[in-house]
Image 1 (cartoon, rainbow, N blue to C red):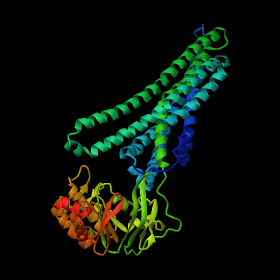
Image 2: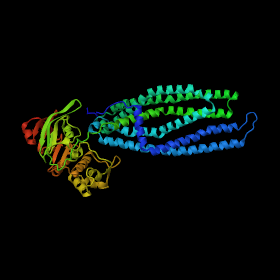
Image 3: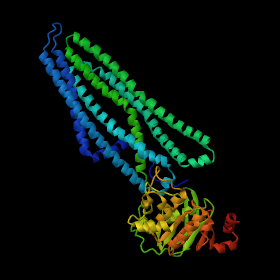
Image 4: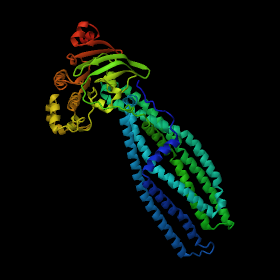
Length: 588
């Protein structure tokens, strides 16, 4: 269990999503205005076509067979020119919309990533990595598709429907009455179907996130799965999660896809009625043949966008569901700001003091009443069984979490009165889980010290006894570490991260199971280098392997969130308590 963000979990409605998306469009209003002008121009030119077609037909005199070819060619040529211009403008419009959607998606992804960098550690403890990646990639791509295609289609549909309506009204208001029946039926059906489809697409996006999260978890633990021969069990679990996602996709797409054909059927009925009504009016000499032809063409243009709008309804619902997930991530509360008047931690001596510290994840209290002090330059080891609260102490010291009670002081200053940046900059941290990015070995070692020279990088590598290995690689320190690159063992990766920590040269050091992935011989070499490079620095070492903490100035034995024992290695062995039992279990 982890502490969740405390932001308001209100339901994100459609108006809210539209307003947020409009905010992105408004940031690029020049492109948006250009797109609007191109849309209007392109569609107006296309709407002139049916009127010109009717005039060309009227150039033929019924019954006589007389044809005014000059008029026919004139109107047909003019119609061709208008359609060509409309197509050219539509092409330019598509380019503008692609650029607009690209800019919007770029900004959206940047804002999402920036928000991720501002979120507290607790958020990542309580959310699957795969689900977060799904929001950054799939969900934003879905929004991008909607912006570049669906939004353009909607704008086009509005103009086409309005223009076609005006054209039909000018030709025959009587025939237009047919749509007073079919349009309300279409609107009512679409509204009812939308109410059912919207939650299905929301569920689809959530299930995809769960599937991605499960997949990421399984891929990262594949070796463990194979080692324990759990392939069949994991396949069954994956099949269950995959089936849920597939069912969610099917239900959303099925109910979404029924809208288009249904609306198309209603529109076809209206076309039948228009054709029949137009024929009657023609026989009564109330309309010319060209007027009937123009009205039918306008009716197709009028009903076509309505049908297309129904077809893209499922895509819009998917985009709304995706945007909701993206915006909910953006709306997560960031890490609390530094206290008013917070100052930077400078000239660090390294004294640390915990006073009656309490902390828990949710309702479960992990640290009850913790108090201890550390002198500058001393090495403190924190030992204890799994789940005792060792890493939690470090998280509180780094202010990844804030205490529920009590205070923590560095050089006599309450850490809550310090800026987080300066506080964390005072520590160099090496974790059990190694993290190397796709770059050269030299860049990875210099990650926390970008101004470091190559000589300093090499010195740090030599200190942890990995220089010779690096030089044995074809490109040496320029070797690129990536999934497709050189195969670096876990122990070698850990050595690189330790070299990175040494190069940073912070006044305080935190080693969280830093040697857990190296063999005993390598551990001894690292320990020697650690003793030399951490000399004079306050160091915190979390270790299950007690051989790494025998020389610590103070060992804190944590059990159930409390200090069970405290002293040096020899003192604790003489007590014959918890530490002595742990030590004997490893070495006797």
